[in-house]
Image 1 (cartoon, helix red, strand yellow):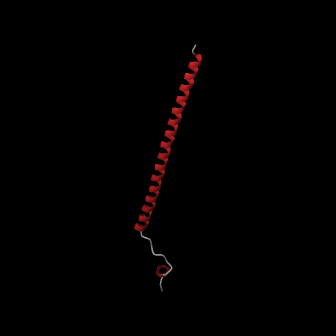
Image 2: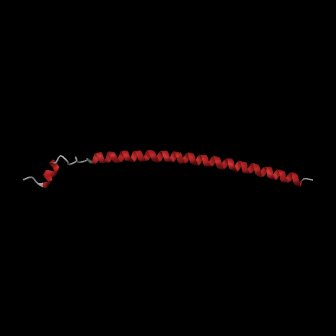
Length: 80
């Protein structure tokens, strides 16, 4: 009389065992996809930071120019 394990192993509905190598390769593929996504996000974030730096620099230049113009205008009004 076959054991219950023998019946389950020979059953046509049982899925074949997944090898450790297959699982490891699937995990490595998933990690590679995640790494690519993270690299893309990092590039986007770096681009955003560069854009923010340019915007801040532009604002600083405009503020400096406006300050010089105000100072020049104030000096002209104070002149005799």
